[in-house]
Length: 239
Image (cartoon, rainbow, N blue to C red; front, side, top):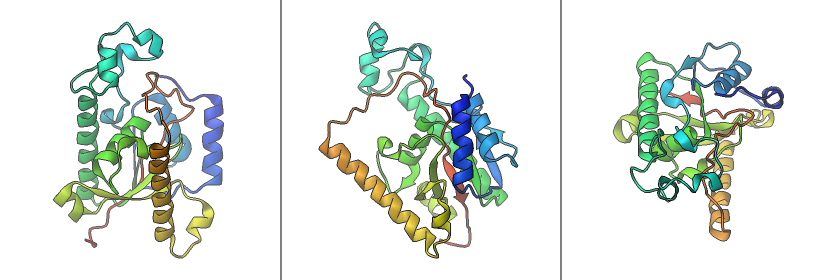
């Protein structure tokens, strides 16, 4: 459980200064230290609620090992190929990870709706973010298309009617916002178009290049960890 690096703290503070992080009513975070530190920098006014289910993928004995070091494990090629039920020694399988993350998100989203909370932020890890968006997001894209830079994420709108009917939410922008974007009168459409262009560009790139989608076996000791839904927009007056 590593802390943020000093460079990471400086970069996060710079993002906070340059970009816009609208205030939220509720703040959730992975219990790992770098996420809690990120939350303190981006939302100093909020007291974060630690959610165990938003912790990163458990790589078990694969953690912090190179591909060469992992060759001695008979599980590694099967796990890398995505075979169902295969998991690192003392770790979790992809299915267990997805189930844990999705069930956790469902509980959080439904809790927000029950309490009438209309904006929330989740600060968590890249794999958690991609899993949630691939499972519940509209438009629907595979996990790797939802990769986001450290310190950034996506804004989603959870419509109670759509959620109860199909367990889906709308992803309508990247996050945080540029100040110029917030001054635009038709901000929602601008943000949706930017997100659409980004996703289309990612798909075209994956079709025209031999992209390597190997999963890093070391946790992105990343300078800082990304934020997911900033904020959830829960508005029961719309369908």
